[in-house]
Length: 281
Image 1: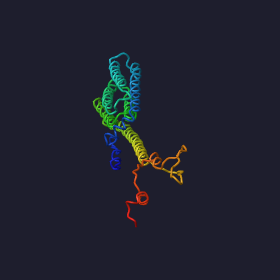
Image 2 (image 1 turned 180 degrees about the vertical axis):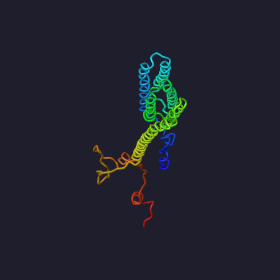
Image 3 (image 1 turned 120 degrees about the vertical axis):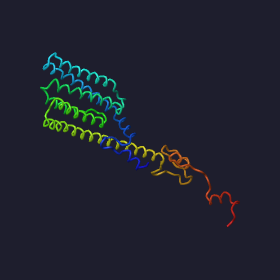
Image 4 (image 1 turned 90 degrees about the vertical axis):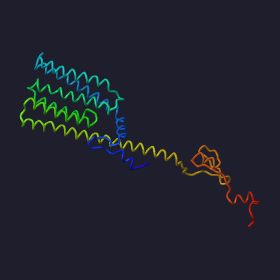
């Protein structure tokens, strides 16, 4: 096996938190696919459940008004999309492919979430805290490709900043908001990268171990050797096997090793059996 090639396929891209070798990354994704899809389905359920649960405070604060119905429509649209995505995802779902619709849904969710700044100005600080939690949860708990999650988190920071500018916040508040949102983004990204790289290191060790075991099994199969004491007859040179039977030495070695025999005569036996073919000394 070419060790340089073998070590090369285990190299990691730090900013993507993936194997540089596409086939190796696909192998890793296939290995973790059942666990990842199960975690993703759970995350989608929690997201939809919490989204609808917080409609209750909206109703208490706004009543059956226009703003309440706008926020409720946003909640229903996102929850419906989450349910559809939940039903589409199975243990056979390709994580690379499913990352795109999940990312699109996350972006739509953050965009619609800006409606709360418009219709619930009394909860500005709570809304910002919720966005911070969403950014960190997106990076750590929603198991899609890291590069997709990072893009979504940066979009969340950007759309929040733009919304606050449109609604007329001060420059000082805008700077403070940027640092507040950057904190969970940086912490979440660093944690997500660390977890992703750790998982791939473990998979690389497992893959290398399996390769070495296969090579060892192949070597043992190809290099079958005899060991220990062999009972051999002092007269006829037959060997006694484990069952007590006496076998010709050729038969015994053929059954217990990879050796093959081609018969010939040594010079001494040749002179003894065929003296007429040899000149007298």
